[in-house]
Image (tube, rainbow, N blue to C red; front, side, top):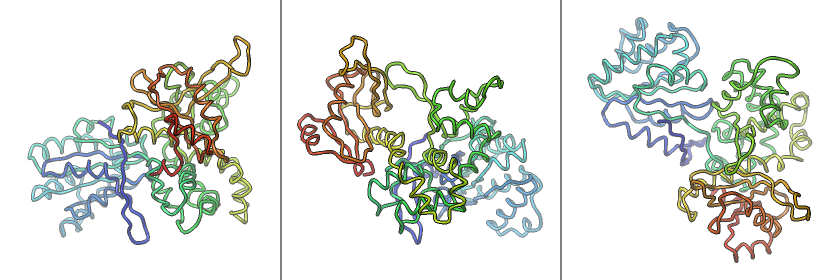
Length: 488
C-alpha cells in the first residue's frame, strides 16, 4: 500500500534547516524491531529522500550505498568499497566482489551478527545497468534474509519516478516488500516554515512560485525578501532554479520536446484534451497524446480534473507550482532574462506586475482546498469530509429577466461527504478587501450546486475582509479565512 501523507516538524541546525518529516520517520522507525524489513522509498528528484534516510540512519548500525550512473562493474566496485570501510575488511580492499549475489551475501553475514540498516539509494541506476538485479535481490531476500530470519532492515530508494516504477514497482521485488512510501511535496503550511520571518502573504506567494520541493525552498535566502529571491534565485541566468524545469523534464521523460509542448499548451490556456492535441499535433500530424498526459499525471506535473459534483468536461492544469511559474514567466522570456544586467529590474518589469494574479489561481485555490482537508482531519467541520474539489457550471442570471438567461459561476472550494456537500467556499486573492458582495454572490451560487443543504457550511478565503462583511459573517456563521490561518 502506498502512503502519501506528509507531516513535518522543523529542527534548527547550523546554517541550515533540516526538515524532519514526522509521518515518514514514524513509518521508518516502526520497522526497526529486530525482524527482517524490506522498505521501498521513492519520489521525484530534490524531494528529500536522501536527507530522510541520513536522518534515520544516524545513530544506527547502517550502510548507505549511493548508486550513480555507470556499469555493473562500477556499482560493485563502489559498493565493495563502502562495505570494506564499514567492516574494516582488508580482503574487500584488495578487490571488488565479483557479482551482486556475492555482495548481498556479504551484507547478510554482517546483519546476522546484529541488526543492520542497509540502504541502496538511487537504486534505479544499478537496476538499469543489470536487468537481472531485481531477481537476484528477490531470491536473496527470500532464501537468506526471510528464511534466517536475519535482522536486516533493507531500504531501496529511488528518484526518476518513471524508471524507478518500471524497475521496482512493476518487477519481482514488489511482492516481497514490507512497506512502500512515495514521498510527496510539502503542503503550503509546511513549506512556509522555510520562511518563518516573512509575512503570511509572502509565504503563500513563495509557495506559489516554488511549490513543496525542499531543495527548491532551500534556495531562497531568508535574510532577503521575496522579490529579491525570485529575481536572483529563479529568474536570473545562472541561478539554480533558472533551468531546473528543463533538467527535470529531460531527466524524467523521453521525448522531452513533446512534453514541453504539452505543458506550455496547458499554461497558455489549452485546458481540454482536444485543444492540447490541436496545439501539439497541428494539421494532420498523426498520433494522440493520451500516454504523454498519463505520464505527466504519474510524475505529478499535470492533472485532469472535473467538477466534484454534477457533470463537467475534464480540464487539464499544471499541478507543480514551480513548473507553473517557470512556464508562465521564465520560458517565454528566457532570452530577456538571460540578457538582463539588473535581475531586480527584470523581475520588477516582467514578473511583479502580474505575480498576485498568478498566485490567485490555481495556487491560492489549491492551498485553500488542502487547508480544508487538513482541518477536517482535526475535526474542525460539522461533518467528516471525504474529498475536496471545485465546482463550476451555469446558474440563472439574476440580472437578466429572460427565462433562459444564465451566467457561468465557479466555487473554488467544495467539500463532500458521499453525495452531500458539507462545505462550500470562494477563494479570492485580490488586492482590495473582500466585501459584502462576495457573501451575496456565494449565497446565490450555492443554491444551484447539487448536494447542498441547510447544513452546508460557508467559507470565504481572502487576503483581508471589510468590516461590513465581517459583521454579517459573524452573525450568520460564515467562516472567514485569511493567509495567517492557512499557514498556522
